[in-house]
Structure formats: C-alpha cells, structure tokens
Amino acid sequence: MPTTIIQIKGMSCQGCVSSVKNVLEKIPGVSHVEVSLDKGQAVVQHDASLRNEIFSQTIKGAGFEVM
Ligand SMILES: [Cu+2]
Image 1 (cartoon, rainbow, N blue to C red):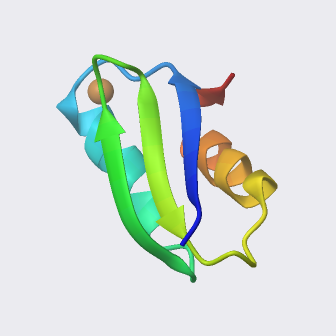
Image 2 (cartoon, protein in one colour):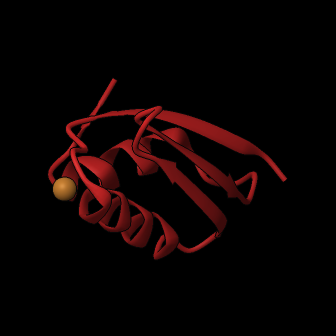
Image 3 (cartoon, rainbow, N blue to C red):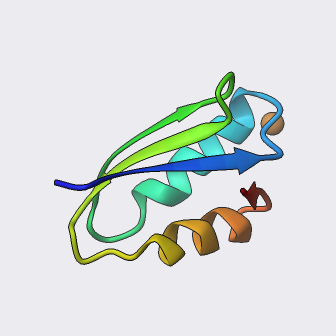
C-alpha cells in the first residue's frame, strides 16, 4: 500500500491536527492517517489509485497550505 508524506503549513494546535486527520480519513481509499504538529506533516496510507492532488486539495479545502 503506497504511503504519501505531505508537508502542511498553517497547523498551530491539536485542533488543526484533528481537522487535517479527519478530512484525510474521509477520502475513499485512505486507510491510515498520521498527522504530526511538530513536523508539520501528514503521513497517509492509501490505495494506489489515489493521486496526490486529492490530498492537497482536501487539505487546502480545510484551510491549510500544502508545501
Ligand atoms: Cu489549531
């Protein structure tokens, strides 16, 4: 199963971490999400059919920036 690491800008507290985690987990085909506030990143395990754009679009839609 592919793992994608996404650098995220704009997370400032655990609430932000939860928001990012929740929206990513709702994407069909995503099986596991870890979000780190310290590292400013999300680690996503997902089906091979998912393209990276869906992750950045979803994160941007939740109000954060993707680097
Ligand atoms: Cu926050």
